[in-house]
Amino acid sequence: MKITFLGTGTSQGIPVITCNCVVCQSADHKDKRLRVSVLIETADKTMVIDSGPDFRYQMLRAGVNDLDAILFTHEHKDHIAGLDDIRPFNYLLKKNIDIYATERVQHALRKEFSYIFSEVHYPGLPQIDLHTIDTETFYIGETAVIPLDIMHYKLPILGFRIAGFTYITDAKTIPEATAEKIKGTRILVVNALQKEQHISHFTLDEAITFAQKMGAETTYFTHISHNLGLHAHVEKDLPANIKLAYDGLTILGE
Image 1 (tube, rainbow, N blue to C red):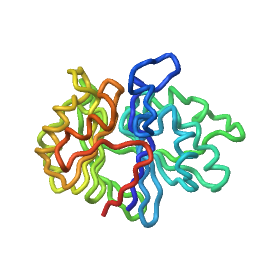
Image 2 (cartoon, one colour):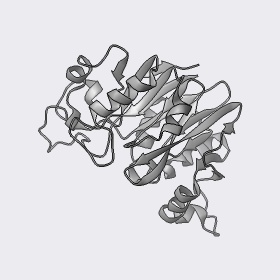
Image 3 (cartoon, rainbow, N blue to C red):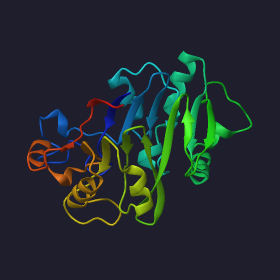
Image 4 (cartoon, one colour):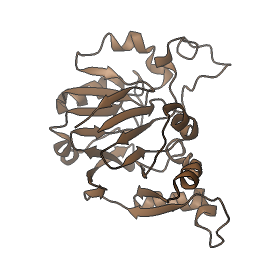
């Protein structure tokens, strides 16, 4: 299994010309973070977790030529806004894209992208097959996917475990029952927004504490805002088995 970080950032801290902070003005490519998303390539399927506003560019930048499925963690705009950009894959691959989401997230998709679900099938619209998921293990091709209950402040969202790889973003609280499902993970990805307290995301210290509790072989932090600081400065102070992810980073899972 090959894992590529398409984006490791947030809507807070997207580099813009009017921002003079050291991160937004950094020349280090590891500080150029698009909205959070990850590409997973297994032996028989290619899937993405979340398709935010930067989805089209992320897929072009990574040279992705195939796509079978998108898994959604939750319905916030920075995680779903790029759904329309699956159309080139529909056209070139002559297939629908499987969408895996809870009923609540599907309701949000139907509202946000009502034209996709219209009875009038306008030529060229995104072609999808919806699959309802909850907390039960499901399969994408030969790959088992375990949904993980996470709390994003008061909003229940999902993380996902695939074999020895676990991906969590936008977490503030992780129930003990979920932590039990994560234990034994070789590669853990979890959000670390900033150093200061935040109402709905792990801080850097909270993410480190959680990572050490889980005891993964390697942990990567994602969903990073510019408030966290420069990649090089932050990573040098992290424990040896904890790293900051960055856009374009590719790792091998089980």
